[in-house]
Length: 529
Ligand SMILES: [Zn+2]
Image (cartoon, rainbow, N blue to C red; front, side):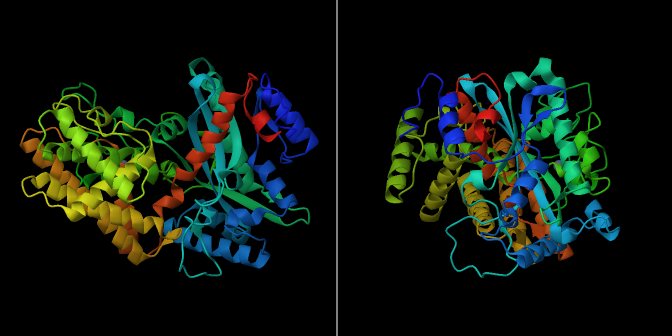
């Protein structure tokens, strides 16, 4: 009622009066400001931890619904035991040996950064933190409940499991203000250092630490926050260039001279021996300086993300070619008529299987295939559309055979493998046991082998299909890591444990708010009161 009476001329101010001042609906978290930049408010990790401890809600970061001191300690001990198998030389274990922290009270954290669309559709950057531990993927039945359960952090409202650190408007960090961006990154890195070095004490004097184990986001954010010399956008596009190619990956030297990233059909690609052999940092990096890490592997703090790699990457490349090939299977005359026939099939399938289609039709424009001389590739930005189209293809491959098109036969095998892999991951817990690593690693490798085969067969016959772009290299990294864990007989973190998928929802919220409020200041003020 009171909210309904708020005017629309300055809704931010008016709703603040009602929600924050009258009903006290804001969280009591200390607001700080960027050093030397009083216009940019931030919520420090230490302030969040103060809040968690004062209000007895640190259990959320343990993936628990209720506080339970003994169980919380057991979960953290189990987490770090597994983490030690993945990163045996991580500096946190030396700190523990030196008696400087207690692993049972060390909370692992991840930092997520991404741009949303803010006011007048300008970019609006949102940085948040979360724990890798949460309530799994929802809708799961029959899973054994264990004392030290560790599930991925997907389920639940993102306001309850993603914690805002700061937001920046484009003008705060675009070119002329790039020093502000550097200050901002340094400040966050320092805050993260405080969390592992000093930690935060509860009101009754028990100390807790926070350890940032990974930085996640889309590839542009990894590139921007890492300031890497090697990234996706440094791919060599022309055949004859004078400068040696710098490489596409901050973890290895793939795509440098003589080290192909396209070598997909093997478990032992040449790039494997080049991991962490050449620094990827263009400038000294505050995170590499302030965060605990595995010595010599600072680049590993920046993690590839399954969601961007697959839903917004490899799947779009795969689907582009498969939909193009499907359209050619239609008997109708013109290319548009064939796509219209394919669209009917898609709509019918959505209807029969109660799936939301997201698009009214499948067109050649949707896969960027205006001319057959172009490589088709999905042009959409919605991960869910990739998911539903993959299911559509999977269903067709299960019920139809394409004898006259060998590429579609290979595509069917590729589809089956990657769908099985993905489903397996979305049903698993945070840690994959060695056998689970073998299964998922093998499936990912199978997809890569088929994709590679399709790309080379298409090339041999002069058809521009199954494009090879850098994102498939990220999938190769996932496959290699999973398989290596199996070989070493150790656990590995589920790739979805480092996924941005839920955080994407989170960044959408303050960005949407920024579109709707009138005040010309960073959104944090209106967001947390
Ligand atoms: Zn690499």
